[in-house]
Length: 453
Image (cartoon, rainbow, N blue to C red):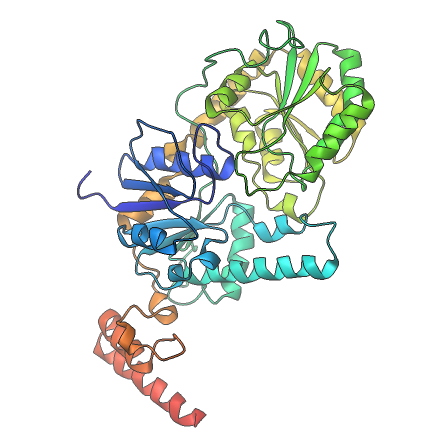
């Protein structure tokens, strides 16, 4: 692939036979983009994956130079989350940076550490805001998950002065600064490679109807309403089986409190390991097989800020498998399900409505839904979803306001505080904008220096 732009995709997650949402996103990015780019996918964990069209690499937070060397060997790097806080060199690198903002972690953090004192929770939010602002300041190009998310992030970018005459001229819609790259589905249909539950587990017979909660039961979601609705569901459909994943493969991610509460409630009802099951996290292949076995895919949530700006990525798994969807109203995915007629949308925290809708979905053959899914699926295949990333890597450049935010000249031209000296700024302005702008910039800086004395 000599001559292709070199893209480094950095994840904090496990990328192996078992993989959760963030790692899955980076894995599928790498597969889809390796056709046109020289891709390296870097994770802090060992991986046993082989036969890939891209390179796998490993870095360590204890050895920051391991990531820095990868960064310097590539033209573009895609990063997210707290990486910019852990690796200070990301703020001054000469490698172009794509920032993935699909997870608005400020809003997610509102639901973490609820047992801690409010002062502690304030500290977590304050740190999340600081990191978000750092991401806004260092990125050359940003991606997010939906139009609604894009509105949220445009506000963040505006607050960080990233919407300016250089990045958002009057005739611009801002897509060269931030574009939408949601979650996607593979080009091929899912394949059931082996039985996972039906005819493989003593409680699952050939007629079992599997209701699959396909991702983590995170603290901002609502598995409890589904469990509370379950007695009415099995009264009508005794062959129904509800399945959750219990854990997830990243050892640094804490156990979700809501998942434990759902298990406890199922135990109190006498349905745990009878009609409600908590499984260990499935391998990537077994997840695909279970999607083929399942009858309905579910994700429920309360109505709050995280819901409004979320992208429920596991819904794309359901779309891939033409699996009718039960979802709570209030987010962009529920609007999609309603508009494209891909399942049923229910009010928040309403066990009666959930039981009724789930009963209808279990009554109707899954094959009835296939035409609606087929009509929509082509628009969310991974090669199509990643087009803004591909386009930026092939045609993009540094953000036009980068010279105002970061000096890339020699270290000798920096002041002791780590900020670029006035001479470094002037020289960079000369390189980028020519002598007239450089002289004007130097004159302005000199006047400011004289004034502050």
